[in-house]
Length: 69
Image (cartoon, rainbow, N blue to C red; front, side, top):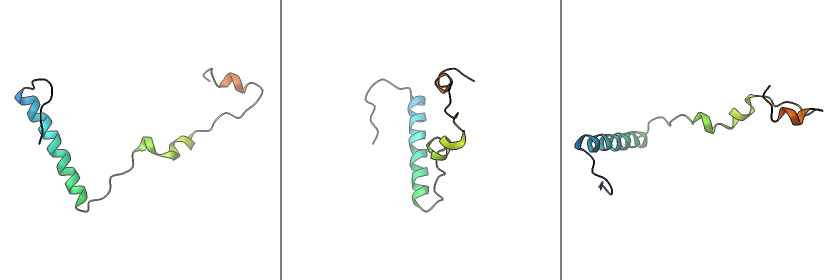
């Protein structure tokens, strides 16, 4: 059951919100039936951090921590 707590949505806004809720429910039901698991999010991939190399420490390493290269 969905209840409007605050505001006064137009019928179009309410229909759009219900369409999103129904689509999400249908996607969840389809995934529960045995569909393929969704791919992992790219931003949560720990290997993303290791893709670039850090500057090696040296005599002016403190300056490289602030100033762009």
